[in-house]
Image (cartoon, rainbow, N blue to C red; front, side, top):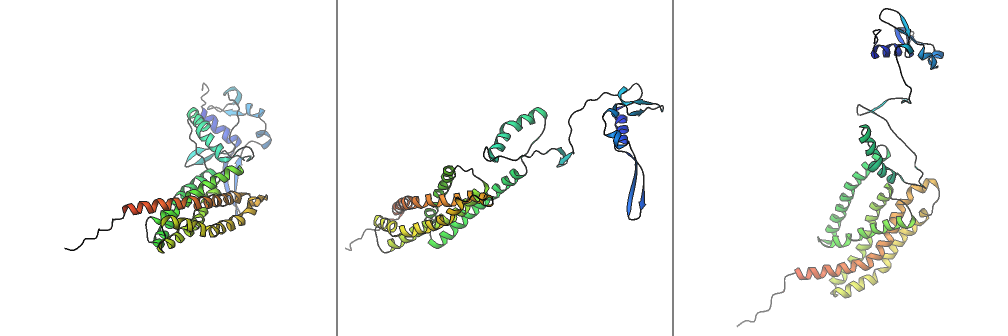
Length: 314
């Protein structure tokens, strides 16, 4: 400062020395050539030459950089990246799935490490890449799940001509989801995005078994059978059909569950969701759905208006 220098002036001279000064551009055929003046490559690559770099003063004299400035060295960024117009850095990592999984690591980072860094250094953070894609996919799948359940209900309500019977049929869906979660726990597998896709497929499959049982029960009731007798008869007569519907699907997915090739590994979570969910739902459909049908019939009978008593004429 005593010699009339500033940080800005030093920066300009350092940039000119190491990045070069553009003197002119000229056309060489189809190419445009830039003429720059800068330090030689051998000088730029040696740190000791930085201390001896001549700095030009306002009066035209030159002094070595080491006599007019102090600096310290530290590790810097190879490149500067921006996100949304703001300076940003990206951290990526490969996960050893035998030790941990991406969801648990991201959850731990978002709850402990990253908030501490943000509070300490005044930075902002976000989980992008595969995590952002998965987050967006799950958000879309919520909408898809509601739409799928609504369409299933509309189709069943149109077929049965009732608002209550479709709900009884669709009670099989939570049973299947419970079995899918139990299957992941049993095989020691973490939930993945494809597991959720398996839930979607499972929701449509398990309804079939429930439809088989309910439609046969309605036929028996239309023939004049009592509620209890119709329930027992429907469960017994449709046992083979329900089991065949489920076992054929499970048998078709079993080879995939035991596949060890790398290409098939990402499909196994979906197969686990469908196979275990369908097996679990089949057993519960044969036990729980008849019970719910009995409760529904009893509730419906209570709400029905009583028949008028006959009145004798005078």
